[in-house]
Image 1 (cartoon, rainbow, N blue to C red):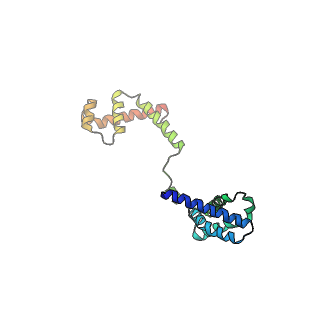
Image 2: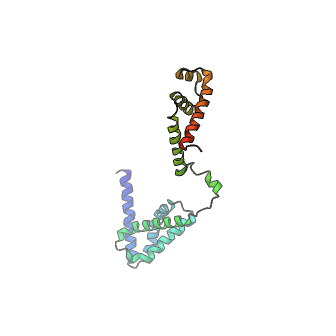
Image 3: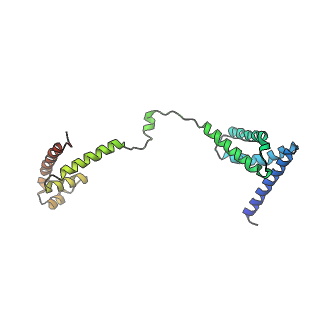
Length: 197
C-alpha cells in the first residue's frame, strides 16, 4: 500500500464517519453532532486558514459554518455529502468575509504617481508620430548629402567624425557647418509643410 492509498483510505474513513455522525444526528442523537464537530473542525480550520484570515476571523467563519448546518440540515438529502457541504460552505464564507474585510485605502496622487507605470497617453503618442512623419518627409526633400548627414546625426549618439567624413566625402572640419546648413534647410522645409510653426 502506498502513502497516497493510505491517505485516500483515511479520507474515505473520515467522510464515512462524518456521514454516519450526520445520519445519527438527523435521527435524533444530539451527541452525534459533537462527534461531527470533532471530526470536521480540524478540516474546516485548514480550509478557512487557506484564505489568510486572522485566527479570530477564521474561528468566526467556522462557527458560521456550523450554524448554517444546524439551520439547513434538512436540505442535505445525502449524508455522504456532508463533508463536501461543510467544506464548501466554509470556503464560501471565508471568501465572503475575506472580501468584505479588504478595505480600500486612500492614497495621495503624488504617492500613487510614482507607482504607476510610466506610459504616455495615446494622444501624445499620436501627436509625436505625426510630427515624426512630417519631419522625415521634410528630410526627404533635402539634398542627398544633407539627408545622409542628418540621418547619421539623428541616430548615433556620438558619431565618429573621421568615419563620417570618409563616408560623405568631405573634410572633418566641414561636418559641423554643413550640419548647421542642413538643419536650417530642414527648418524651412518644415515651415513650408506646416510641421513647424
